[in-house]
Image (cartoon, rainbow, N blue to C red; front, side, top):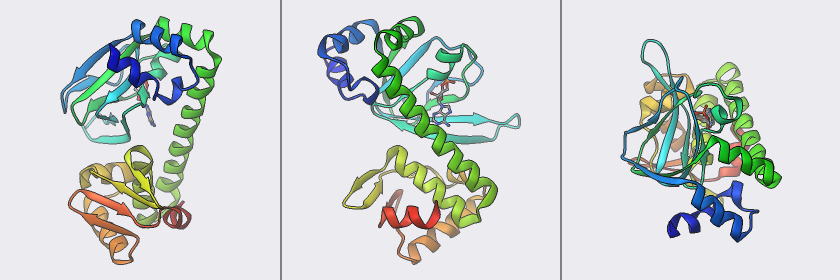
Length: 227
Ligand code: CMP
């Protein structure tokens, strides 16, 4: 449990807690490992736990009745998921699938709700993260309904940069870009449009592509241009 204990200090929603409380959380939760491509849970299932990612990456997705998938978000180390069903008591709002071997830390509903009541700082941090997710969802609604192909693709790139990108001196590096078909599903466009638009961005010097690695060369400018 020592690794989990250390890891909990770096989880943003727990960052204001003292050592004793972090230790307490480490004893009320359990760690679990999911292999790459395994389903952590499915949309519409009943939910009784909150999950914090210790290591690895997961995708949050929804599927249509004819089997098409849309990725809503990609989460990685120190991110949480599963709070919605915990808070409103309804079923899971989306599928969560490990896209890398992932270790997660589970806290059962009752214990998580107690934590929110006993430590309002955790509730505020949770609300801040949910606000960020709502802003992102609003940005995507705007892009899907109002923007042209470049705007849609740029919005998806910006979301992935925010989810899993690493920023250094104004350059954002996305180590492993999702497949072009996944990007197309996220952007509400076709795989061909994704390919064409990414190459157009590269030609304009806005991004660099190298295999599945993508770099946004001037993150602030890119954001200003497309948001
Ligand atoms: P829950 O509904 O319990 O299970 C699915 C989880 O996916 C949900 O809680 C959130 O944690 C997460 N989720 C749903 N929609 C989004 C979104 N748009 N962005 C990020 N995470 C989400």
